[in-house]
Length: 234
Image (tube, rainbow, N blue to C red; front, side, top):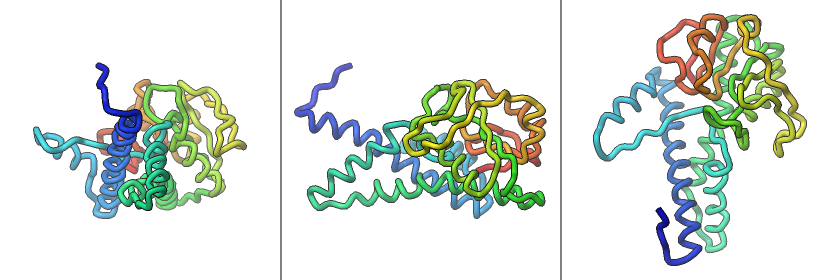
């Protein structure tokens, strides 16, 4: 339906409110995920239980970071505009800090998991599953997977990726030198990887099969529901 409002400024602010609402709530649940990791509590179980309340609660879910052109970017248009009228947008900026930190959190969880298995991140073979910023699409704009790959590479890891929707990675604005090709997802590839990081939970991935063949899986999307010895939740 077309919903008329009084001006183009109001219409634009409606869009900004929608995206900022999601950014702030994702930031909140990402912060909760960071805290629950230290408390050794399953944040996904907490969210599922809270979502049983029939009113007053809307579930948002943690992840490896924000992607797409709207949620990671639009709220900061509003931050920029607010400065013109000498106003500081504290909620927006704080949520942005937390959401921007999540790829670093994924890297540190992976580094820790490798260390516990007697392996160093330097020289480790890390396979990233999913380049798109959300499941079952071919859009990698602002994808947290790009940041995650760059962070692993900065630590000296040998990074490869698989995404059934994105056969090649090249030409991104912030990562002009990052050029990779999606490799076929085979038992051999999984077995020779020191760590497999689920960054995008594409429906086509057989997660039980992945866990069966990979020595270590870092699950950022709660794609693997059952507790497994070789699975680390991030």
